[in-house]
Length: 311
Image (cartoon, rainbow, N blue to C red; front, side, top):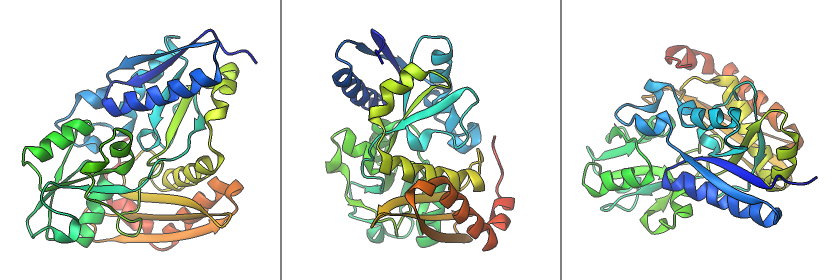
């Protein structure tokens, strides 16, 4: 297999997205010394509309549509995504060809005044863009005020620094990747805040059937991470599909077994259904479906019926 002489990576232009693209660029360049690997930076609709919660404007697909069009038009060979931004149902004609090794998948507490959630006084304002985090916070800390927080990582930190929020909750992986670990006051345990499906992992998206590029990116795939993320995504897909649902799904490989935990909740956090399964990592998607079925048996359908869906 000979790699093409030029490999073009489509990426969002936020600092974190560009870090991710540069990271993949470096790995592909070292694996394919005869190829020129370049990045095509793009602004997506999800980056442009910042005055409304993501759930209201169409969800996570808004961050990848323009990148997919670039691939369809032959302007790029592949796109790099944060896996938690990839819709659970892939658009027809596209595939996730590789999922790379995971950075810390947990949520981070960031504040200039407080060291952790338990230190926040009643009425403190906490920012998040995630329905999952919002439902967790409302369930466990009903005395706090939860406000929507959109924008890229730097924008969110600026809003915190300007005093608009007492604390914000972000993915630890993004802060670590940008060298901003010093902003993390505490990393929330999975028990405190179960991560989103795919959080901390990077995915490589290709046009379906691009066999030559599939061979090029195959070495970037980390089997353990891929099994975990596939289980998480199957669980999420079975419960929510493309709907905006307060849902957490997190798997690890534990003593050779895939251990998947998941929950679904109402946005106010007053109703939560959770569970866990263990099994062979090779049965990743089946385990995700099994956990989804168990949560439905415990009453998840009643919660889902109350949530407005956004395709």
